[in-house]
Length: 332
Picture 1 (cartoon, helix red, strand yellow):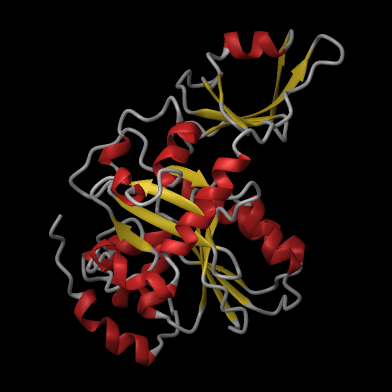
Picture 2: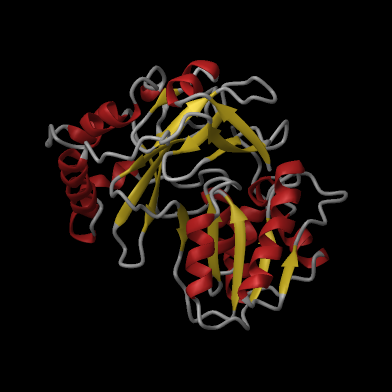
């Protein structure tokens, strides 16, 4: 990690073209000069989000005494609490018959994936509740709202009690978006990764993204599946696994077949070994297969072959359910 010095906080913002949000700062990377780096206010680290092209990491220092990053002020607690209640009421089982039109079926080869929904636009969710998701999103994501109504796919991340804490807004395959995913936090210390919380399983499959997680879950329905929302967002997931008392679980890492995925696989493997996990496998034999991630393999009809070549035990019940989708042809 490199050190980078600024005279004071104002110097940091002006030098890096920084823009403040609630708990983080978006800025220009000192190395590649692209404005896709971020600084969380809870740390002094600057990280370039272009992991495949740059991925530089810096430790921030100030020359002037008593200078530090501003503390996070939770200015949106009232709106967030209302939004949390609204979303979790809307998506609770007793109200599910009212949102059947939102459910996604056969999205990226997935059959009834659950917690992935299609919306005409985000305003449509707030017809009965003016204090709902749209109003909160405006206050949370400003000024990053230029493409908000192009984001018609919603991924929901639930906590261990089944409550939705995070919403990921994306576009479908026909939508071209500069930033693929925008995250809405419904609680301050939100869960930022997918977890099906099958803690009794003797295996954990760790992957990138919710579509990869749902792809593995569709095939291996008795395994604990964890999907990161970005290879850089590891800390909460690692804290969760560190608290797990059963360190004899086998962990298989299914990250993408790119520079970021390969580097992060080794990085996470080393961290898990330090936590006490002994059996950790990196599943990255993509040679001769069409696709660079698990969901692409599904859409190209090669997921079963990939799993067989990488010596992953199949789940016969899930395998039978998956025959149709493993022959899925990409309609997008």
